[in-house]
Image 1 (cartoon, rainbow, N blue to C red):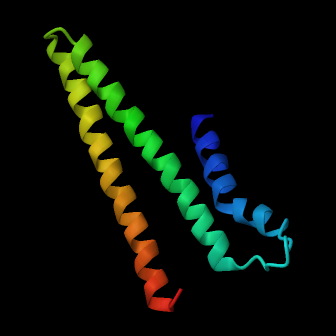
Image 2: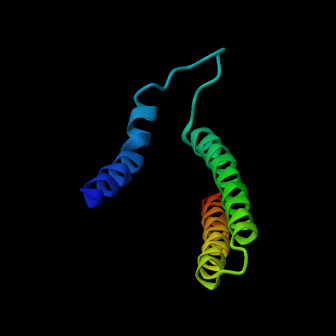
Length: 107
């Protein structure tokens, strides 16, 4: 059951640009173009990513504070912090790849 949720969520995220492109219109005499949409999506995902990273580090900090010396709770808090850092690194690499591809194609 849990695997189905993950698959459907991933497919929904994957196909969400189709729904965005279906609603393209020209507003105020300016045309909506693909680089503008990609840049807008990149900014929105950056905000979501940044918010998620802050929440992840706050949760890890609270886990450290409430561990009270219990080694299993400290291990869980440490793992949460490490995975938070790994997520930030992956996110930065993803945004760097987007910028690299944009520079290579002249966008």
